[in-house]
Length: 171
Image (cartoon, rainbow, N blue to C red):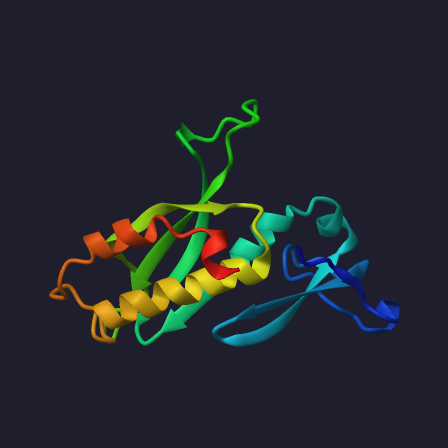
C-alpha cells in the first residue's frame, strides 16, 4: 500500500487539495502512476484524516490505449455476491470497466459486455492493480484491433475470461 508523504515546507507553497479544493493545511502528497505517466496529488489535512486508501487508488487509476480505457470500480461485490464484512471468509472484490471514446466525441461510453467482477481484492497493492489493468486494456485493445466501435466483434468471452484475474497472476 502506498503512503502519503509529508510535503517539505508545505506552509510556503500555497497548495490546493486535489480532493476537495481546500487551500489550508495542504501538507501531504500522494504519487499515482498510470498509463498517462506519473502524477503527484496534494491532499489537505482534513482529507488525509478521512482518506480511504483503496478508493483514492481507484479514483486516479485509469489506463488508456487508443480509444479504449480500463478502470477499477468498487461496488461492494464479494466472493458469493454482495460483500459481507461480517463474514471473515468473504473478500471485497474489484470490478473492471472498459469504455471507448467514439470518433469526434468527448464522452466515454461503456463497451458492452466489458464490465466484470474479478478475483482481485480491493486491498491488493497498487502496483498489482496497475499491472492487472494494463493486462486488461491490452487484451481488449488486441480484441478490438486497436479501435473499438459499435461494430466491433463481441468481447463477452474475453471479459468472462478476464473476470478470473487475481493478484497471484502477477507474482
